[in-house]
Length: 364
Image 1 (cartoon, rainbow, N blue to C red):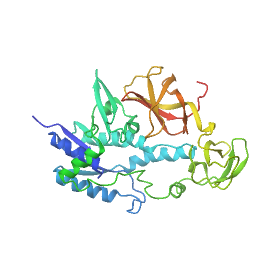
Image 2 (tube, rainbow, N blue to C red):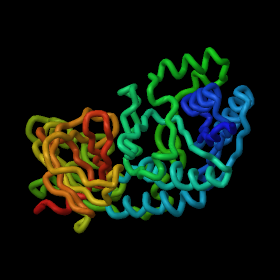
Image 3 (spheres, rainbow, N blue to C red):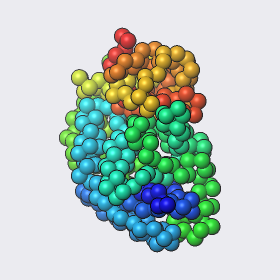
C-alpha cells in the first residue's frame, strides 16, 4: 500500500520543521516546500529568506525528506501586496497575513502541491481541523497563547479538507523540546514577527516608496487643530506613539490616541486618554465575509469574536448578516475597532469565519 503523500510548507522555523518531522514519524511520504514570496529589495538586512532556506534545507536533510523551493513572489504581489497598498491608500489598516494564508499558503501552495501528487498539505500553524458530519471545522490551537486560527478564517471546505496541522495539539514549549531532542539545529530559533517584505525596515520609509505622502491636520473631536500628520496611511485607530503632539496637553494631561481617520477631509482625529469614550464601539460592521462551513451563522448570543490577534474572546451577537455584510454587537464595548482589520467569530473552540471591518453600515 502506498503511503499518503504530504507536502509541508517549510519556512525554516521550528514549527514547520517539527510538523514535517512528526508527519515523517507517522509514516507519511513527506516532501518539504519552501515558499519565497517576496523579491523586491530582498536583502539580508531586512528579509531573512536566504537564511530561512538554508535552515529548511538543513532540517530536511536531518529528517530525511526532499525539499523543493518555489517562488510565489509574482502571485504574492498580485494577490496580496496590491490589496495591501490599496487598503492603506484608502485609509484602512489591512492584515496581509490573513490574505497571504488564503491566497498563497493555502491556494498557490495547494495548487502546486497537487501538481506534485500530494494527498494533503501541512503547515506549522497552531490550529486544528476536525471533520463533523462531512463538514470540516477549523479549531483553535491547543496552546491558547499561540493559537493562529484568527489568521486562517478565510479558508474554505476544499482547502481544509486537504490540510493537516501536525502541531496544533501541542504547546510551543513541547514543539521546541521535540526539535531539540531530535537534534534539529533551529530548535531555539526566534519566531518570525511582522511581514517579511517590511522586515526591520521603518514602516513609514517602506510605505512611502509605494504611496505618496498626503499631509493634513490633526484635530480633536471638537475640531481644535493640534498639529500636522504626514499621511493618514501611517496611522491606525488606537495609536499613541508617533503623533508628534506629546507636548501638547488639554485637561488632565493624559496622552493622545487616534480615534478616527476622516479620509474625505484628510484629517486625523485624536482624543485624550486611553479610556476616552470615542475609542470604544458597542458594535461593528464587516464585509468580504467568509464562513468556513459555507453556512451563515444564526443571529444569536452564543458567539465570541476577536477584532485583533491575541485579543481575549469578546462575547457578541450577530445582529444582522447576509451574503455580503454583517453587524456584530458586543456585550461590552470594544476598544479601537479598526477598519481594514478582521473580525473573526468563534463558537467555543470552533472558528466559524469572519470578515473585514468596515463600519460603513451603521444603520443595519
